[in-house]
Length: 318
Image 1 (tube, one colour):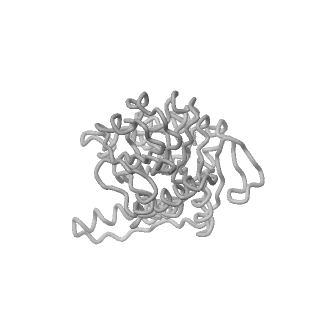
Image 2 (image 1 turned 120 degrees about the vertical axis):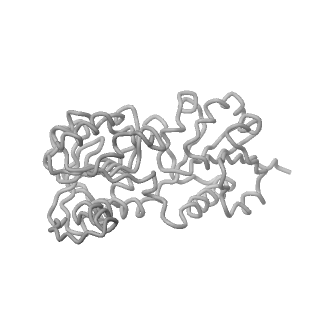
Image 3 (image 1 turned 135 degrees about the vertical axis):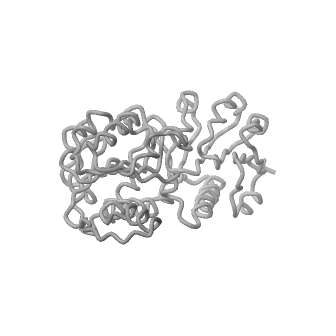
C-alpha cells in the first residue's frame, strides 16, 4: 500500500474548513509557528494558512521531504526566502479568490473620496447639517499599478463606471485588452502626473519595494489620491506622510502598511485626508471558505498527479 502523503497546516487560530477530503487521503498535522519545526519532518505538503507567518524560514532545515507549499494568500513575499527559492519545492498561491472583492474595495474608496463620505460621517457624528458639492468619477483617470489578475479585475470594474484606465507593469504595452496602455514600471515617475487616482496592486519584490517615494509623490497632481491595497512596503511611508502633511497630495486610502497593526501614535492617524482600513480589502464574507476550497481542489490535483493551478514563479516573486 502506497504511503499516504503528509500535509501540515500552519495556522494561527482559525482552522481551514472543509478539510475532510484531504484528511481522507492524507495524514494531516496542524501546527503553529512554535510547533512547525517538529511537524515538518516527513511532510510532503505545507498549507500556509497563517499567510503572514515567517516560521517556515526558521524551520526549513526540518523540511526533509517537502514537495509543495500552498499559501492562503495572493502575495507570497512574506514566504519566499533564498533557500526555498533555490529548492525544487513547488509554491502555489490563492490567486483568483480576492480579485473581485479587492476591485470592489478600490471602487468604494474612490467613490468615498469623490463623494466626500469621510466628511459626511464626521459631520453626522457632530450632528451638523452642512451642504457641500461632490465630485463625479466619470471621465476621471486612474493608473492601476500592477497588471496581474487583481489589477485586471480592478481595471475592468473602474472602466465600467466610466473612468479612464491605464496600467503600470513590468513590461509596457500599447494594446492591452484590460488596460489599453500599460506603462513600464520604470516610467512611473514620468507618467504618474497624468492621473487623478493611482491604485497600487503590484506584488512586493525587490523591484517594487519603495517604488512610490518622494519623487513619485511630487510628480503626482496635488489633487490626486493614492490607493494602496497591495503591500505597505510599496510606499516609502515617511515620504507619503510628508506629502500629505504639506497638502501636496489630496488624499490616500491605505489598507496595508509597512508595520501592521499601524501603531496608535503613527502620524497617519492624525490626517483627515487619509482613509485607513486594517488590511481587509479582499476579505469579503466567505473568503476563508473560498481559500480552503481552492486548497482542497489543488490537493485533489496533487493526489492525482495532475498539474497544479496558481503556480508561483519563485524567481519573480509572484
